[in-house]
Length: 125
Image (cartoon, rainbow, N blue to C red; front, side):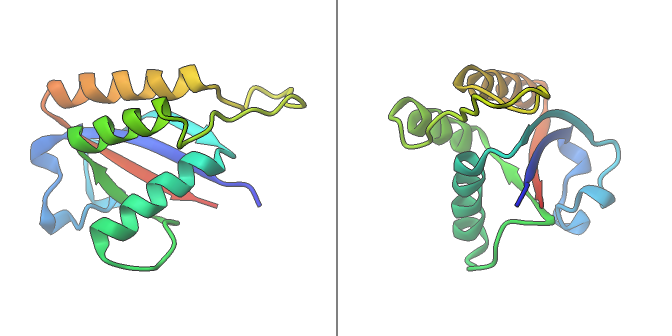
């Protein structure tokens, strides 16, 4: 099964409990990074989502806020080899990502947070 993950940013004031952290309710909200078929990273986001929401539901069709602390934890886990890089030697359509792309995402997300934005992660299958 194919899965996609999108990273979005929105101004901090646009993301409130009243919006329910739902992307459809947040305006403006822009996609700045995405992954296709990166099960290792999806599993990491799913575990974080389940911990944040105290649920066993899968992380699909919903969004969550990713904090600076979450980005630090993600970087630590990638560097420790807990999230193997996505490798797909047969990939010819440009839909695969490498470890460098994961670090690029972290750097971009930190820059958006520094600019008074919130990072949202959305996953769908």
